[in-house]
Length: 497
Image 1 (cartoon, one colour):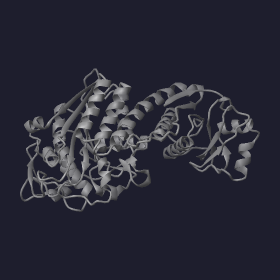
Image 2 (spheres, helix red, strand yellow):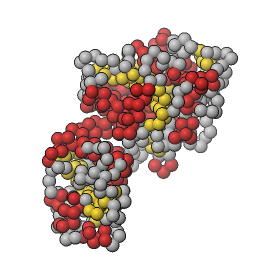
Image 3 (cartoon, helix red, strand yellow):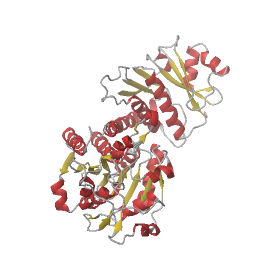
Image 4 (cartoon, one colour):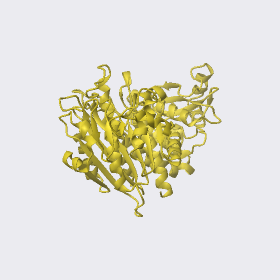
């Protein structure tokens, strides 16, 4: 999508759809007041008779706009004129974008820069509009024999004040880079398991390496992982005909060669549960069990596209968890790369088994921080629903940094405790630890398990089981937590750390 920023008179914009806001209390925004004059008071009349109240996200499409250069005018509820919350702006931006895209319009001009958003500047508003419209225009129909022929939005213009044009342009550039990463994340996650086994993730990483010279891509095969002693990761893969892969992408953007941010993404391309097989209903959604890996690939693409001055490494353990005659069994004991032994009480708690070896491997990059991203526990969905990702960390400043990034991006996380008290739930009579700690505090004990492999560096864990995809009629990958991670990385790149 082509997204540009310019200044100009709203009524003079030649476009299929001009978007202006109406505030709570039926008060027109400055751009809407300009259009109202051009339309001979039509907007005022509509508000007066109650067709639009100004509540956030409320919409009304005018299909005739005689007196302006636009074919249509979309009125969007803008909330309180004195200022709205950031989440409210994101909500109305997404509603405006969806309305335009659903109407099959090819281009639009958004006059929403005059909305006041608490603690947010013009650049943030421009970026959120760009992300909302690119997100609404995303389409995944490559598996269909007859893809949709509905026109896609091709051009969006953001109208802004002259003094804020350069700030908005820079923000849009960053947002478009992030949008490319989001699209890759969603594409990979939406692919069915038979079209996206571990080798497909490796192919996607290699394609990124070819497209961006700043990325060095390495793919370790089973024999190489055996030499490294990755008995835990390999144990999960032994029930599948698909070979496991350990994928690394190294981005060197900081000439000072500072320590990298290392992102570790869980890549279970399909999770049947193994011998501890999952119930049939909803099992198709276990193709999304590689959303952590997909998000790492999306972030690496965005970072490379934007050429950020920071060092970032992506590590992706990729496997398929299947229940054949070679599969691991409840009660089996395996030895991880760290040398610690693990009693497998539940083969459906496989994500932590591949992550623990990947986290041990991450130490070789001498990281500043390590963040793992995983659709790890159903318990996180019960605790936080689909609104926030679970966050646990062994380093308070890192946790706070991620929480702030989540708040600013709107891709929020919520911190849970990682107290030593929970570790005893992982006690085993036959190994150094069990891979599950019982029904109580399942998200926390899963993180406690991972914490045993991260003691040599600063680490955070994002459990995205509730946020990585939507179920029901809107089934599909959300792209989260790419916005959170990109906000975190952009902040670090700006301050040179």
